[in-house]
Length: 303
Figure 1 (cartoon, helix red, strand yellow):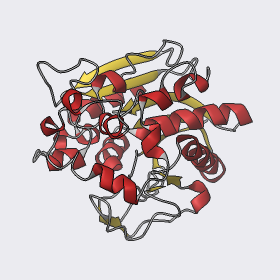
Figure 2: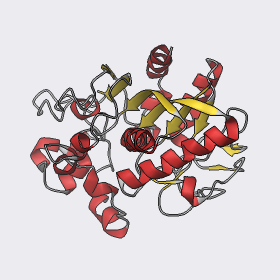
Figure 3: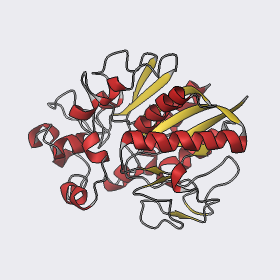
């Protein structure tokens, strides 16, 4: 049996397709989310693939000069049917990710996968796991790791849709520029994911999480939250947070145990990403998928 780790980036991300042997020859080898994580896991002896993601419809651009941490000279640009639209519907992303994993089976004889999803990539992976089980895909899910995943919504998007007040979020305490222009950006480019990063969409008896059913039964899951930004008087469901997702949401603290029945939960003093760290004028190793402590925890979990 051939086992592989599949890295899935999150909302609005652009990530190239990489294999254990091949990555981008210019810029960041696997994009801003996956480069350090991929390198660490390869060094630990894992067979690692990154799922292609484009922040819009279509395929991953080559070169991609628009994303933070540009990359180019990709080893291969996969077709749209295997590429996740990182600004679109969660379950549509899950369909494309499931199709990508099936491609790994036929190309590389992959029979078993460990999914590692950053941010919305955790929800994309969760959706793919359910779909793969429903259709009897030839690949078994061994485990799931979610890093800064908005299981109960992302604070800035909940603010945009009126679920969280200005006073509750206190955007001035988040990285400079994160809240500024967010509504304007969504007005120009909203392909569906933004409204799904909310409490009313994800949580409750009719919410997305419970609708996923029992697909995570028997699948060990590691949920990691970031706590870099804090407030002594803030709502504990909103603070601390990683600049985008609260620790409470990232560790699914308010969800029924049936949603993630075999969960290990951890928190680290990290930001959501190197993009957030850059906004806050912090070194990149404070970003969740570039932080040595987080990388070590993920490796220990996979072992």
